[in-house]
Length: 159
Image (cartoon, rainbow, N blue to C red; front, side, top):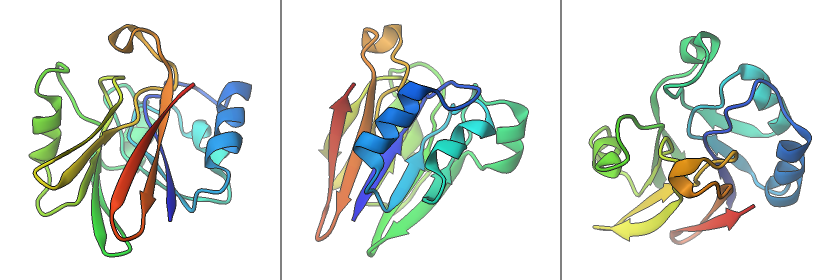
């Protein structure tokens, strides 16, 4: 199963760039995870027709924060994926985000704009980075893909 993962879009509505990225890299994804800071609900229109899980981030508009939780657990083929945005300084972000969950196989988070794809103590820590880039990631844009079959594997795609 292919899962598209995106975070920190910081948009008021879909842009041609976002639409092209979703079409090219997530067109055949069966599921989409958005790890917060989409900014406005209209951004989700780009994923029409797909099953989408969203968590609210610190920079989301009130309409997003009212509609979506700050954390969720998504079960895929027997694997539990923790989904949250994150908060605070980038240092220690993984540990803070992980503290929200128990017994997960993968932690998907955002906030730092820095892509992460590594296993630690049997858990895949996965941050797709940011669609818009930003100073913390040296202005490099990225998204991610998860592949779930007998295990969960992640791939960071630099845009």
